[in-house]
Amino acid sequence: MSSAGRLAVFTLGAALLTSSPARLLSVEAPVLVHFGGLALVYAKDGLPRLDASGTLLVPVATTCALVGATCERKSLTLRATLGDVSVQLPVTDEAGNAFVPLRRFTNGLGLGVAWQPSLHGAVVSDAANRGDLASIADYDVGSAVSPVGRLWARFEPKANSRLLDLTVRAERGLLTIESVFSKLSTGALAVTGAAALGTPDNPSVKFACARSGSSCTVTIDRDASYALVRTRRTEAP
Image 1 (cartoon, rainbow, N blue to C red):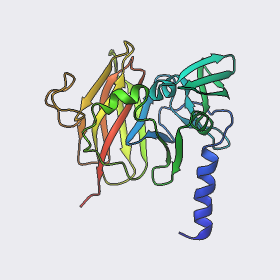
Image 2 (tube, rainbow, N blue to C red):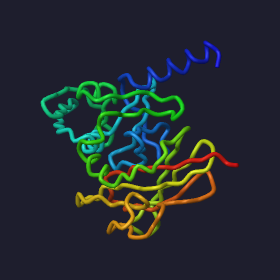
Image 3 (spheres, rainbow, N blue to C red):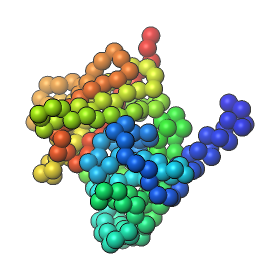
Image 4 (cartoon, helix red, strand yellow):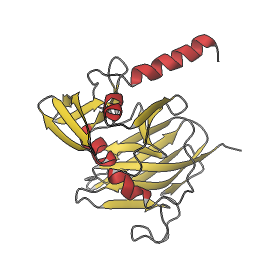
């Protein structure tokens, strides 16, 4: 890549993690946030997205639950607390859902975040043993390969059903969704796939979705608060 090309990628990555108002929601995520090897592909309170200036905004309810932060909203201000660290942030409101700039949220709580050009997404670090992510870590058998390249996520309600069709598409190569982790409205964590063979959720299912193609479709409860996927991708022979 030329020096001009490298500068363009760096500038885009820096812009995506600054702060500004949000764009309209879309059923297809233009950019995903990853928590280690887990990609956030569905959130009832809205997917992470970019505003007109390239700022990456994240939904408050989902993000706070994942990292275990206590979050209190007053009008257009959010106070987030993690352990003995607190940060106060401006809130963008859309249809009653609150969004905040990802970098200001993570930096204020002492968590790491970095823009990964190969993923066209942000990766939050230092959060695996906190909040809901700590429960999900219990299912980690260490077999997953971190995704290389961009992922897209699209969800559509199934007719006359309490289910959603969730489709994840890879930029290149072959895609298998190893596991889907979804938080139900009851507070229970539903696990689909190879997270831990023998769990009550899936006693014998090896993968949530294994296909020799660039996309996989799985179903989740329409009332789920969020869904994260762990993927395995290999290049086509």
